Image (cartoon, rainbow, N blue to C red; front, side, top):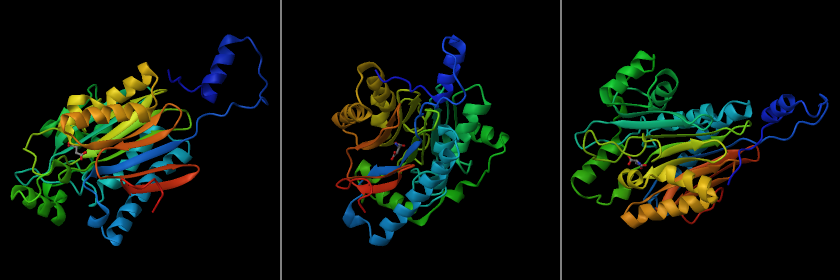
Length: 339
Ligand code: ASP
């Protein structure tokens, strides 16, 4: 069983509460967990030969910018949930990722976005599905978590709730980009047939200096999806899960399979009840996805901050950052930081 790390604060409270051993203020404070954050920018058919050196550099720069945004929160002693939100935001604003600005097109030429966020402290969560007008879906998910009594809003009601919270709203054409339009045309003309060529998502998991875990995921879904289709990204337990002392997960891949396997919750339950490492548990869950015919990947972090990346696709945009530095990777045959 993975034990919840005893933070300096918790230790202090216990000592005071028990009144057994007087502590001097000069006693050394036990070292707490150290912050650590991992991100992904989608998994799929990402082959070395299909990315130019220039494109690869653009992705690496965008991944670094996202990680730095999350790390800035954690370095200052901020919470894991604020950090995962901060890391996802720049990826939502980048045309490179299928999340906000760069969201794929549904079959009818519109964009419908999904997002979720979860705080491992109390397993509070918020999500939105099928939003068309809120500029940053992860902020809408966060508002659902913090400002409503619900966990999930969908469609027009989700956009209306986001607007009522003062979030930036945009016309659906804000999400139009040339490269996603071409992808839609390819799928509609059946020039791109595999599901792995149709998806992409962004996500983050983190542990803060207090040992709190959090996870966040945003996506535009799958290119040429049926209008109204909801993937795994807004579903707590499918693409996103976080529980302090256990694990946090953000997934990317062919959502229908991730929903059917319940990937994120399966991983955390295996860690919690079977004492597997996050890497072992993620492998089992991904094998289940593969056995049903799906592909994709996950980023996982355990209760003390160990990070793992597990995917069965050709590549996954990914990176991790801690006080020791930052690394990124894209392709399957690449260890993090190998560029
Ligand atoms: N999981 C997302 C979905 O199915 C897509 C992706 O992660 O690439 O909507």
